[in-house]
Image 1 (cartoon, rainbow, N blue to C red):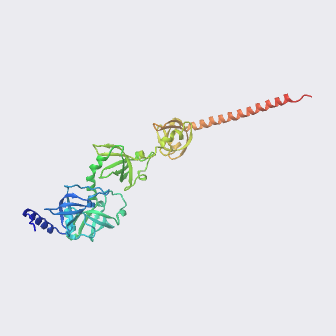
Image 2 (image 1 turned 45 degrees about the vertical axis):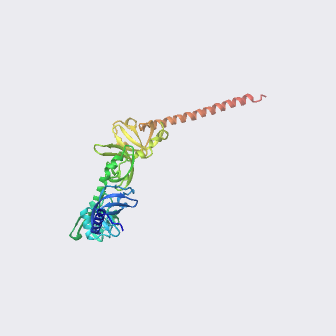
Image 3 (image 1 turned 135 degrees about the horizontal axis):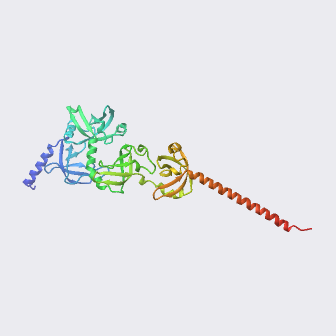
Amino acid sequence: MSEIPEDDFAALFAASIQTKRLENGQAVEGTIVAIGQDVAFINVGGKGEATLALNELTNDDGVVEAAVGDRIQATVVSTTGGVTLSRRLQRGAASARQLEDAFRAGLPVDGKVEEQVKGGYRVSIARQRAFCPQSQIDTIRETDPATHLGRVYTFKIIEYSEGGRKFVVSRRALLEAEQQARAEDVRRSLAVGAVVTGRVVSVRDFGAFIDLGGGVQGLLHVSEMGWSHVTNPSAVAAPGQELTTKVLRIDNATKQVALGLRQLLADPWAAVPTAFPVGHVCQGQVERHAQFGLFVALAPGVVGLVPASESGVAREADLKKAFPTGSDITVIVLDVDAAARRIRLSVKGVGDAREAAEVREYAAREDVAQAQSFGGSLADQLRGALKPRG
C-alpha cells in the first residue's frame, strides 16, 4: 500500500475537518471554481468543494449570471455525500435558525402570499408567518393588490427577532437589487430605432412610464401613443401591462429614454391621397378649435384644418358655438400634402361645390333636351321631304 505524502494528507485532513464543521442551515461564503452542466462548484475553504444547482445562478431566460471567480453567499442544505448549497431557502424546509442565518447573511427565501392584511400581506415562510408591507411587495405600486394573493415569491428578510415574532420581509428589495445589477447592461443595449418590450410602471396625464429592464424606464408620451389624438393615456396603457415600443431618443446626460408606439402602427396618411383627393366631399368630426380655424378628424389619425375663412360663418361669429367639439361636419378637400400631413378643408366650399354640380346637371339636362328637340325637328323635315306628292 503506497503512503500518502505528508502535505497531501494534511490538506485532506483539513478539508475533512472543514466539511465536518459545516452544518445544515449554516450560512457560508465561497468562490465559484468551476461551472458544470447542472451544478457549480464552490470553494468553501481548504480543498473542500461544495455544489450549487446551476439553475440558482441563471436568470428568467436561462442565462447563467455568474462566472468562475465570483464570490457568493449560500446556505448549507446537505452534508451527506458532500456539501450541497442553496442560495434560496425553500418554502417549508427552513428552520427558525436557518431563517435567522438567512437574515444575517442577506440570503433570499421563498414564501407564499397567503392573505392581505392591514398595511400589507401575510406571507408563509418555513411554516412561519411573515409580514410584507404593501410598499415592499413590488416595484410597481399601482397594480391590483389581489394579484399577489396565492403567489410564491422570493423575499429578503429585513427584520427577524424575538424568535420570529418580528418577521418582516421585502420582495421589492430583491427586485431593485436585480434591477440595479442589470441597469447598465440594459442601457448599453438600447439604441435609437430599437424595438423594445417593457412593463408599464405608471400612467400619468402626459403619458406612461415603462420599465425596460434593470430599473431603466422610458417615457411613452401621450403624443406618441397613436396616430389619433389620445386624450386618455389609460385607454392605451395600464400598470403591469407589457407594451412593445420603439426607442425615439436617448439622453445620456439625464439617462432619459423617449419611446413611441404609433411608429409601430400602420401609417393612416399613406392612403390619404387616394381616400381624400382634392374636391372630395366627406364627413368628419370636429376635434378641436384654434383661433385660426377648426380641426376635423376625417379618419383615425387623419385630421384636417378648416381655416376660419372657409368655415362659412361670419368673421365675428364664435366657431366653438357654430361647430361644437364632437359634432359631425361636412367638408370638401381643398388641398392635400400627405408628406407634410396636412389637409386643407372647407365648409363654405361644400355649398359652392353643390351649386356647381347642380349647374352642371342642369346644363347636361338642357343639352339632352336640345339634342332631342333638334333630332325630332330634323326627323319631321326628312319625313316631309320623302312623303310622296299627289
